[in-house]
Length: 196
Image (cartoon, rainbow, N blue to C red; front, side, top):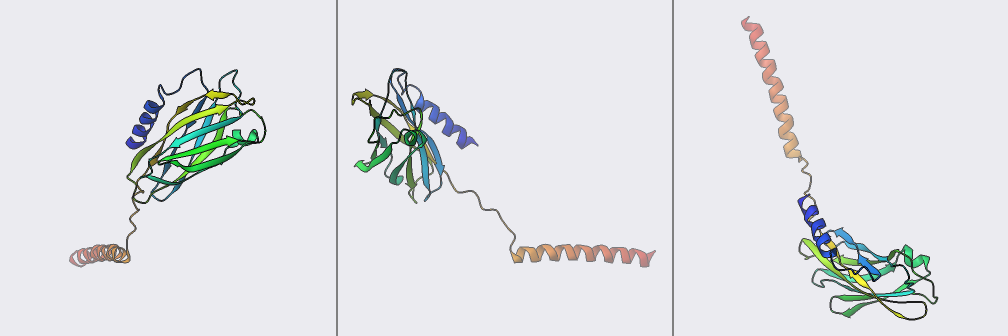
């Protein structure tokens, strides 16, 4: 529980002050996983009135010592605008470039534009790793749009403690103690009956 609260506080601190109210915003969400898991994290567009976007490029930064196999798939808002994703998973060390585009000029509305996927490395340290967002966009008439990014995070969780199940030796001990206790009770009752 404490870890979850710390994780949420860190996310609020990371999100504060990163986005300008005048620009459309691309926010990377959060995810949780264990070592070796592949985790999917949503990437969301929050547009501003008067700006129509038909293509978006996002450089997603990640710690290559913790995460591997970066990929992306189109989300509901991207799909609704008939867009697809193209990625360069190794744009630069620790950066995956994701391009959301289509052979059309359809406007992309607010919502999840795509998902990014990462595999958590088997030797990754437990805790939070940050995913950075550096977006830019284009209008249907090919004008460049300055955008703001809000960072996200992945929480690498430790595996749950295994539930202890008694072994046959432990069960044998338990059954022996029950039988021995029952025999002791019978013996004491019998002895009282003979003495009385």
